[in-house]
Length: 185
Ligand SMILES: *[C@@H]1O[C@H](CO)[C@@H](O)[C@H](O)[C@H]1NC(C)=O
Ligand SMILES: *[C@@H]1O[C@H](CO)[C@@H](O)[C@H](O)[C@H]1NC(C)=O
Ligand SMILES: *[C@@H]1O[C@H](CO)[C@@H](O)[C@H](O)[C@H]1NC(C)=O
Image 1 (tube, rainbow, N blue to C red):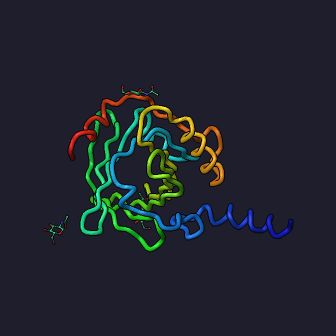
Image 2 (cartoon, rainbow, N blue to C red):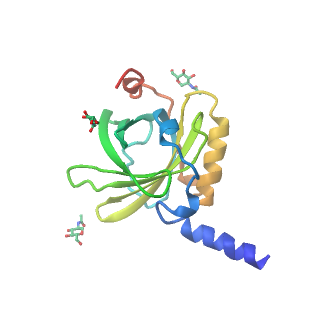
Image 3 (cartoon, rainbow, N blue to C red):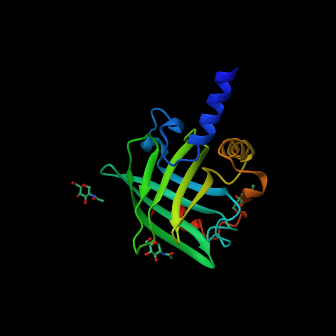
């Protein structure tokens, strides 16, 4: 009993660190993870930047494996549609990678916390903005329909990581931006 409480506390504490071994998906397979993902929901704690550039409309990302490195082509809405291609480096912990951003924007540390490869993926993202570190959790889906199960899973995982109901933001189903990703990239 006492042991399980200590374990629960440990899980809570280590959950705050990025790229932790603890939450690693064993046998994570980047080749199965590749392809198109729609971003349909995110969770960000209060006190985070007031204007989240990725808010409102659904975004998306295409992951490609090339010579062992990851190429990400992401689209998000920021007054207008922005499509950005970046390179990421895989790290030692399975399912973790660093997105290298140019222009002094600071890198992003990403960990895939949960995925079944076929329908949903929950990602934990840490980045610096104005010298303050931020954490955002994102729910990605392979489809724009029937995402109830994925949303349920997302709430479960994000709550385990300390996010509360007001932190969740469901994105509007406006595909204006992601259609750019649906063709060949
Ligand atoms: C991957 O490797 C091939 C062959 O070595 C090379 O031609 C190609 O430019 C490389 N691609 C990238 C993105 O580095
Ligand atoms: C961030 O920190 C560095 C080094 O501590 C400092 O030089 C810089 O002015 C800070 N930038 C901002 C935006 O606070
Ligand atoms: C979201 O929009 C797409 C494209 O218009 C549509 O195919 C899909 O059914 C919509 N999903 C929901 C849940 O309304």
